[in-house]
Image (cartoon, rainbow, N blue to C red; front, top):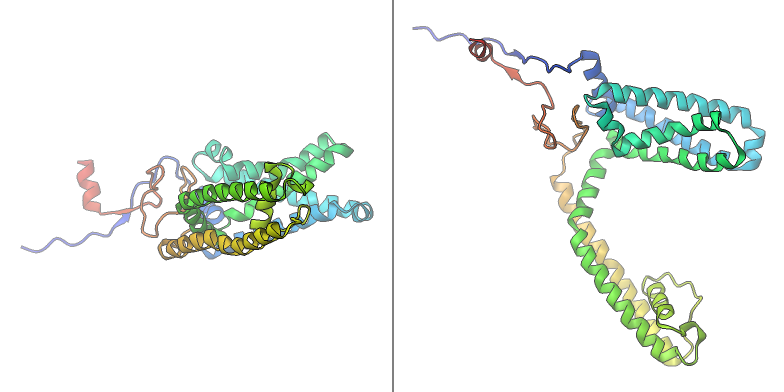
Length: 300
């Protein structure tokens, strides 16, 4: 008896939301696994940097007065481009309203609103606030594919070290309170800068962190000796949180994979290279292949 020939596999039936143009656009805009997606990120990065530089130049009154027309034209061109990009992002996802309410969706909206607000409700005082809001565009860089994997494992490292850092900060709070109290007992009667314990704690924080403003300084020999001890202690303490976060970064860097694939349903990224389903909402990331026999049996 001859063995049945293997029938070629073909794509599974598309989900009801599927649109080839929409799906391809999502891959270009939200992911950077393809040359077109990487090129899109590079172009967008250049436009973001240009828009931020534009805001900085607008804050210089003399430059803004002499190049007002050019700045306005460039601002409107960038705003139109970012507006089109925002609309395409909403259209390419399966749940536009969910993306619009997300962090980066709000940032996208805040990046384009100021120009329109200034056009319809312009005013000298309002422009100061509007210019500041335009700087929100810098947050767009965080969601570009080139920065996605690095940002993911840095965030994971910070989350993993949160408990250790919290305990460390609690210990530092106790330490500066003790040091401030000691300095108050030493300098309180002769030095106006240490007239109360809160001021002494402020001095301890400034000295321990090696900032050293110099607005409060000890005058007695014992106070200076304690200051020297706190300064040296500050260098050792600064190394502790750095070592904690660095250790977690190394651990996360081993486990994190450079994958920029985004879910078309919930918009979340950070999936494994071999992931078939979104680990946040459970929907398919890519359409799987199925055997014709399976499809025929399911129909029967």
